[in-house]
Image (cartoon, rainbow, N blue to C red; front, side):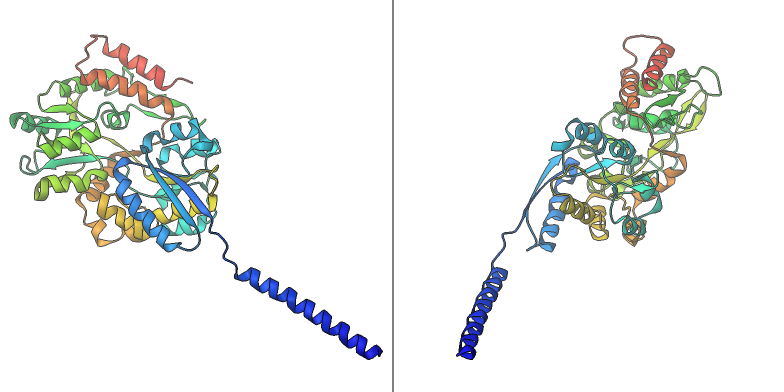
Length: 410
């Protein structure tokens, strides 16, 4: 009798175990709802179509792992830091910005160190990795190695000798009833006139404030010499101060036959001028009775991931996807922008680009952009006055002194 009871109890126990296993098996087979990942992405307005194409390939690659809602909003790289820090918690998850902003963004807690830093370092040009780092720690993903400017010119109007000096470029443009364009509302471009004169500007050791000697009265070239040179250029009928967008429209409508810009306009200029599209280093300009080589700022564009993103892992994956070799090649084809990815930069297509060659030629006369925030507005205000022919009639030295005072303000 005992054996029978024991047998019955054993059977009941087995049934309970099998029932429990059955429940566990069914729960594994249940369909778990996919996570909905919402990412806001900031980038240049001109990059919208490219970013949408990159996002489509990203979603196809990760199909089944999540449901994505990726929203693009236009935001210029140069002003990204100020907009983001204005409302960090509600800012973009992924954003494009100029490399000179990385230290401030990291200090403000907007960027966390990149987890897979070793791979990013191995895949990209060392200069771009350095530009994306603070104190040896990588805080962003390198995107381009081409954030500089040079001279575009239409070969239908200019020969090789014409593009050596700005004096000759202005003369040819004026005689043709056309113009040379440069944006004097942007301090970034205005650096071209001061950079190789012996006058200096840069970032102090505190990483926030600037030093500047652009108002210096002694030395081979004074600040007033540069100001007078700019006034002389502005007075030429062959000159026009235009924003980058206005410059491109002028290229397309034929009113602009030469101008200062960067690789981001290479494709559009090639389409407008065809086989007549030319690109070289910046020319010299007359200053203080001599020819001075125009300088330039250099740098690169980076992709950042907001430290306050609600989806940090997916935001990082998308940032890495945007900057991978394949998509940097795609960016070069569609936008003409020079890759930071070493393999993409070594491709024959990139090496044969006239715009990239011009950027490399100008590199000898460029300086890595490391400037505090007080630089931009005072320089733009001064240069705008020069572009308009100094309408106030104020002393050039007084205007230079005011500019430097504001640039170096603490």
